[in-house]
Amino acid sequence: MNQTAPLNLALDPQEILRRHAALKESQPEIRARNAAAEIGISEGELLAARIGDGVTRLQSDAEAILGDLLPLGQVMALTRNEACVHERKGVYDNASFFRHGKMHTGLFVNPDIDLRLFMMHWKFIFAVVEETQLGARKSLQFFDKSGEALHKIYLTNQSDEAAHDALVTRYTDADQTPGIAVEPYDPPAADRPDEDINWEGLRAAWENLKDTHAFFPMLKKFKVGREQALRRIGADFAYRVPNDAPRLLLDLARDRDGEIMVFTGNRGCIQIHTGLVKKLVEHGEWYNVLDPMFNLHLNERMVERCWVTRKPTEDGVVTAVEVFGKDGDLIVTFFGKRKPGLPELENWRDIVADLPKLEAADAV
Image (cartoon, rainbow, N blue to C red; front, side, top):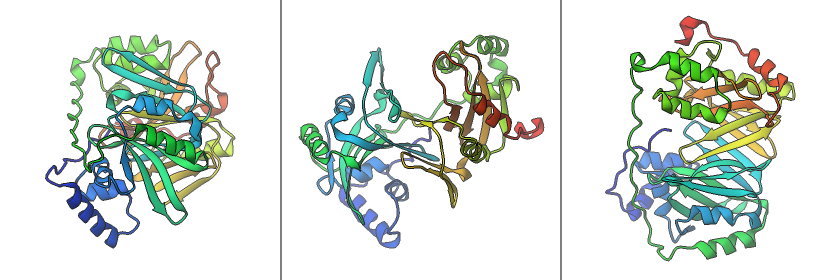
């Protein structure tokens, strides 16, 4: 994912608030993420500057807090990256967490709230109350060590507000001093030269995949970048489609009642929607799904490349549309609805087959 911009550590919380107030005067509707970028800090730093004024610092125990969300009832889960925002309403039920060496991961597996969590990155947690035209809006917000937002949970009119308030009281940190000390991530390593990759070995491993979850470990084994592999593996396993492919496939899924899966994530969280999409709306540079339980906002101008990929599994080939940004960041991935032990839906395969292929000269 995109790294947080270089941070101006000289700014104390009062100066951050002063600059934010000036921005709000000239741009009343500016969102926190964009305001932070204009100030030259992270969104987490902007929020932490407000501690004591609608923001409460919570204990840095994301696993415990996530495991205590069920009493809140229906809430709205939000996970995003720079180019895509994924919002899903549901209940935080069926949590599980795992530790293996330095790896600390978690899962929520439900029809509505479906998350893959990489807990090593979850550091700062806040309870936030924002005044809006519709009244106070309450949320729990989670950030990584660089101050980049990983996940947010908003109350809905179906939520148990008293349970939320009790959770906030239970996990309020003793330190309510405004501000946080952030730490930038190292930039991602560049891909190795093509001539250093064992392409024959990679091709053989790809052909013998048994599960889509083995795909990323395979890339790591051969020390090859994701798009680097897609460019060279062969058109039977990966080929380019136009950058408006997400819009085209969403339109086709709507028109054909196609049940799809939509994966959006960042370094700390992947959020998944499974089901139909119905209300599709263009608004400026964003293409949006605006359904009662699921919203998606995709910035089409930030889409640089789209690939159709095909991965063998024990249940047959699994087809995906993978959407990348300018730095090779994976923005969003689309699949057909899948159940273990069953082949993927023919409806989904037909939708993908109807996306126009780019000619080889355009695909490079």
